[in-house]
Length: 145
Image (cartoon, rainbow, N blue to C red; front, side):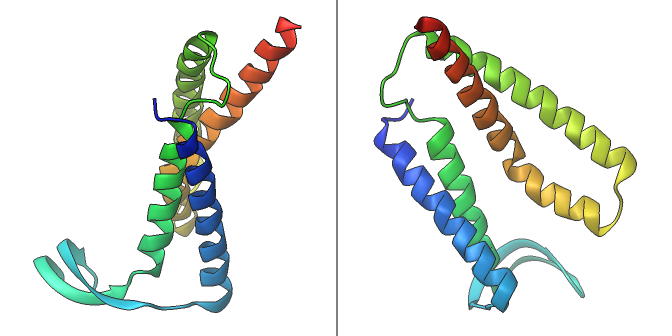
């Protein structure tokens, strides 16, 4: 587990990702930058090539991914031994819920909607985990008093 301060850094990174996503979708900002692509398939398929692309999306996704990983894998400010069991149960629930959600989308959502879900799916397991973990933590703490 990471120290608690990484949770704060993670929250800042996720908030930064949200801000960049809002800016991107409202203003369509482009930051052209040369990137190395192991595989690229737009008009033609190319391997191990360098080309210029808008990296604004990648920066936003990296902020989200890094932020969620820091949040999920950081200790709480006041860590109790019981939190390990709560974490394990929360991971199991998150994996099952995420698999069920993915199954639903596979069977009932098609085209651009499914592509949008795949993008959200990168982070959905972390979101589900956090919701379940903090709910279970709340129940645990309430039962302690």
